[in-house]
Length: 306
Image (cartoon, rainbow, N blue to C red; front, top):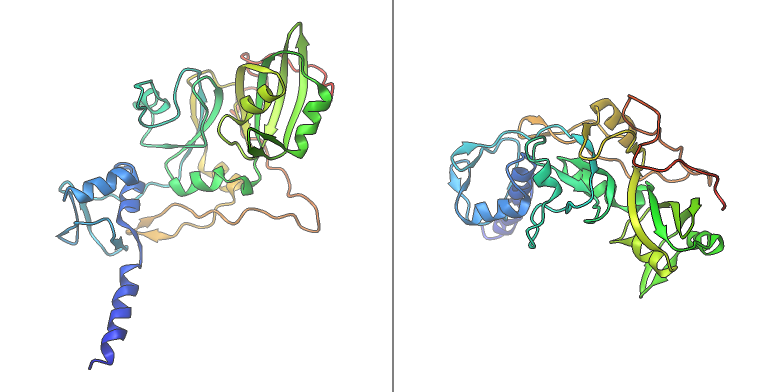
């Protein structure tokens, strides 16, 4: 009998890791964040099949009954995505230790619980993508996705076309290595200029730090595109949900799987790789259907000098 005990132990261990972590399941149902879900569990407010949990180290599957604060957990919502025109002066975080107003404070009455795909700092504005699917957010933030973040940037100073062009090879600023950056001059007016900047990494304050390294002080930064999704004609503070069909077409989502008896969030395929040395086809831009005109917040595009 003792010979059978290790096998039984292995079987139990395998069952323990089937399904998904309980905190993740609670978060995806829109109750709270994963970290807050772990706190609920530690406070004894979560049960599985009638058993009150004492630790978040528990996986659950479709047949488990999860109850939070006495209420059965609803199944996760379908994957949803929104375009939001973030105005300057809002912090892209759920809780700010300095008490500043956040993006999620501004959207609390308009949207369910969402998370941002990447961030825009306090003084930056423009397109911010929001989703209810944490896995989707993590996937689209990766540089391997190959999506370009594009910005219109107003700078004070005289931009040097040659130094801007050299950014395509990457640059190191204060020990931080930044990947290739596309930068072009749109218009110069006195000591100010408007640039169009494109990058794929999106490190913290990357555009500001790189341009300041070139002697250009950023006075306004507007993100106008994130991959195929564009700011278009959205007014500051405006929010627009991306239709499910567009999400499937642009993100190449696979068929949904089943978790807890409902359709779970679709799974993204691996990042596309070039075939025969050719880059993948560029996705069609996704904007509001209303008008092709440029946003009034942006200056008209002039001839590039690069």
